[in-house]
Length: 334
Ligand code: GLV
Image (cartoon, rainbow, N blue to C red):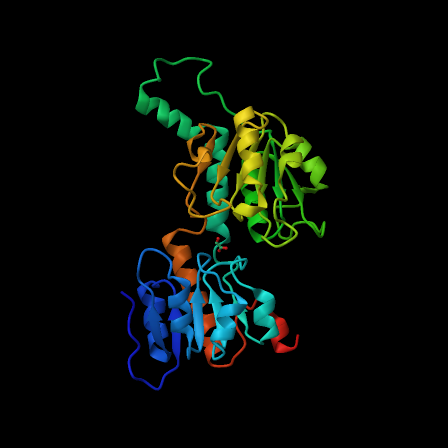
């Protein structure tokens, strides 16, 4: 059950998940936290009722923060999202009302890039299929034609979205001796040392030439189904698609068709269009598709760092100070 706020002169904030001990204790020194502790996300009605009179809200990608909530809860001075992505929040509605939105960039880059690369390896080398062969007894002998996959060394990876995580995946790919192509809406080259060999290209060329395509764009109106039937059709039949960004960036129905028909070879997905995916969904049962439960940033160290930054954002907003990581700095007149 959720905690009841005590009678206290401190501001009250609402958390839709409990946090690790360190950031929780820090929060408790300054504010009274009302925390939803059930395994499923809180119902909209609980969120709305709890946020009435609250000064701040700490939400996760599983919570929808829309204009309706802001209208019902005009005392909210800050929303702090425990994620780098903010597609679960109506950012323009917050900005119109002068409510700053915090997120957690940077601290989750390495963990998410690691998971993207784990999916690149797993899908390319058919790890789940191979494990299934051990479990179901179809592994009979050492067979030179058994479970052949894609060799990463010398192969080409195309990174869609050249932000922090895309750049970190590019670094990992270079260490595996891959050729790295990248595309971003701005066309600006990747930043930082070690990525000078990455070639910025148009999306058509990236899709045509890549053996692996890894998706790292933020979700907004312009990136919904950025990878659809047409894009999948332009990929190599041996290609692997990995998505650790947001599910709706890839047209899931078109992907299912492409995987079933062999239009592309395999996919590794940490995100899907509707989460959690129905365990009966055919995508989950394809031998050439690995679906994970949105665990890109799920390491002990990264989740602790995200919680610290989300608490920093929340406390700053409650105190009327500038958020250390603010998605809509326009609220400060920038
Ligand atoms: C998680 O998906 C995030 O956006 O941080």
